Length: 148
Image 1 (tube, rainbow, N blue to C red):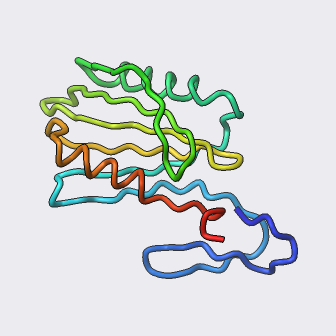
Image 2 (cartoon, rainbow, N blue to C red):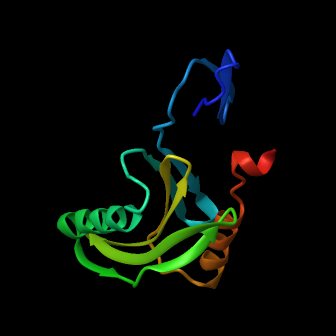
């Protein structure tokens, strides 16, 4: 989000390059990244309508939606984790979507005024290699404040 009133544009990074945007803006994008070798995908979402301190309620609402729409939903206990040296909450789950069992790792962290939600999905259980890959993803985020 552009926060510097002295800047006439603020760059938005796309896979294809930089997009210079005038004025203030909020990133409401959803990024879907595929990892063919891992047979996995990562969805990054931003939630701007969640007040500080309401992260747990947000996760509960997301899980309730999955339980409504899917069958045989199994959810682990929430646990604390770290992403980009910041506190986050993580939960593991799996469910049946039609005839396919889907395995997910969901992590939610606050970044300034919004939540950044990571959903790492596979159609196979998380073996050690997939768990290590997930840890690499979490370790790979560098927030703007960390970039200087």
